[in-house]
Structures are given as structure tokens and as C-alpha cells.
Image (cartoon, rainbow, N blue to C red; front, side, top):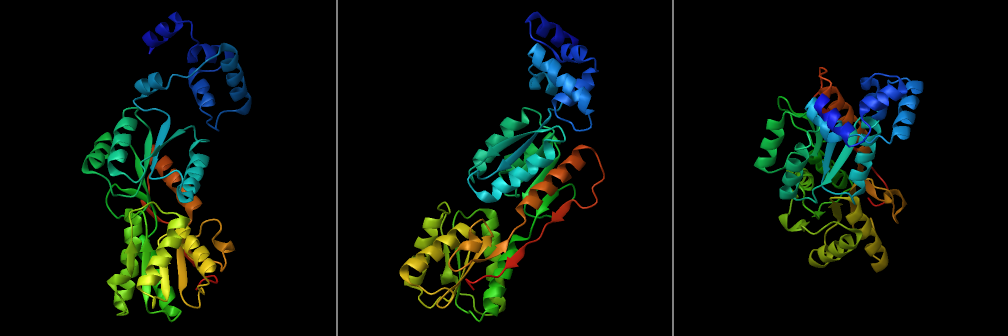
Length: 341
């Protein structure tokens, strides 16, 4: 470390020690203040920030990682940055980790396992303090990278009961079964599952929906309309029309997410298809706008902010070496019944 500081001084750049000396605090206090750790006295933190500004100090994360074998970063990998579900989760994660002194690095895998593996490989080279990943479906190489890194890791969106596995999520399959039971309870028998993107969580919802219909002896595999195309409201309208043209007797539909369901409701409104008179519609996630559709959309509400917050809190506990009594946190879900059913 001393060698590194001497080289830095030779370039004329201010070091952390320079900042600490200027602010009349220890280097550790200066480091914590600059990272935004909220346990640092406010007056000391202001002195450190002022000293850093006067000296033009810019932190060197690479040197800090080499010195500590860990950086002050947490990597969060999600499959999409356009999906409001993950935006809500990321906001909650940031609100917990930033005040604790961690910078959040976000990686977007675009629902591509190979891309996620590449991101994991690249980010682990920076020695993050922690890792938050989405779900459990990834390449074997990516799994080995995470396991051998020994970096504290929390899985989002899904649940698993296994030694050493930390996760925060909900039972996607049970959510799908709940949607089926709701439609059955409304007297609907010709029930369809319509899905796009086809990520693992979507398929789990479909499995739960299917299981509930089989139990009631009313499952018809022809009423599953699945496409790997990206999910959108426009696609939801197209899929509704395609389904009803081929199966006009369908009287209930579970869409794997709200944007498909919202698009279907708008298309039904344009075409004069009565909802729920002719067909009942259920969505998933309770995204913004679901309660303002015509008719208002029945959907499965997922606690996205809570999921992000609890994942970040769980990761902090693991990184600090604290005893974790509940490694698998089930945040649950809620059926929100509105006019579309």
C-alpha cells in the first residue's frame, strides 16, 4: 500500500492519506465518509468531503480492491431494465445499499444465459463485496463462477431450500395456481394460459396454472398460447385475437404479465368483446395502470419494493458475517380482484 501511495504522489494526484491529513481525521474515517457510511459523524464527513474537493481527490477503486481483496461494490444482475418489475426492485436495493457505503453496479442479461455468464465473469474480476442475481436458471459455468468466488450471493424472484443458498422471492407456481382457482371460482371452465418471453418464472406460473386445471379435470393443452417474443401491450392484443379466433369458446385467460393483459383489454375494447361477459382476464404483477384499465384488471400483485429491500438487507447480513435465521424469504403475493373477472 505504501508503494502504491508513493507512486500516486509521484504523479501529483492526491491520495486518501492526503485527504485524511487535510481533514484531520484517520484514513479509515476519511474512507468511510467518502463512501457515504452513515455512522460517520456528520461534521467529520463534511470536513472530509471539503478536503477531497479542495485537493481534487478521486478514489481509486482498483487499488482499494487490491488492498482489501474486496471492492465496496455490489453487483446486481437482472434480465431487463425496461421491465417495470425490475426497476422497482433495483430502486429498493439501491436505497438500502447506498447508505451502507456500497456502490451498486447493474448488469442487464437481456434474458440471455450466455450474456449473464459473461457479465458474471467480468464483474467478479472487480472483486465485488456481494452479488444479487435473478432466479436460479443459469449456465453451469456461471454457477461454478459464483460458487468458487465465495462472494456472498442472494437470489431474487424465486425460492429454494438448500444449504448455503440465500434467496428472496415468491412461489411463482402457486401464483399461477391461484389465478386458475380464481377463474374456476368465477364459473369459468375453458381456461387459457397466454405467455411471452418464456423466462423460467413465466414457465413456473404456467406449470402452477396447469396443475390447478388438471386437478379440476378441465385442462386442455391446446389452450396454452406461448411465444418467446418480447412481452408488450401490442403483443397482448395480437395474442388475444389469435386465441379467440382459434378457440372461440375460451371464457377465461391468465396472461403471464400485466402488459400482455392490458394490451388484451384494449384490443377487446376496440373490437367490442365483452370483458368479463365473454371472457375473463387475469394479469400478473399489478403494474401501474392495471387499476385504471377499462375494465379494471384483476391481477396477482407482487411486492417488488419489499423484495428488493429484503434482498439487500439479507445480503448485508451475509456480508457482515451475521447469523441468518431465514435464508429463504418468501414475500408472498396477493390476488387483487377487479372488474375484468
